[in-house]
Image 1 (cartoon, rainbow, N blue to C red):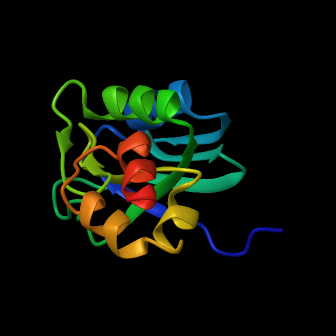
Image 2 (image 1 turned 180 degrees about the vertical axis):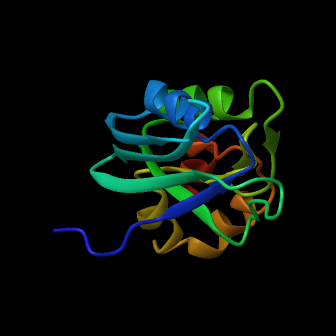
Length: 147
């Protein structure tokens, strides 16, 4: 049983954000608590086996890169797919596999082999290559690991 639940604050587009995330990741909306005018107030959903809550709390607080969702994206094709979708329509690339989606939420899109490459015998070269990247390029990291 999950005992800790990430609770994300949105201005007024929590339901839209959740619907978007569910187009990219396996999951489902579990419950929507609606305000008297019918707008979503709190959305509870499961994504990637984890339950989340999203609140339409107004403009008082904004997401910050100090909190992000890290995704084990598998291979380069999935890294590329997620990167394109999450940076579309106003999302922004950052460094080292980080991005901010159009809703202001920070993500880390990481290939499955990343930890092994970063801790392998040529970790210094892999880290140097990684520090130059926005979206992670697995082939470049593998090449650095062989250098």
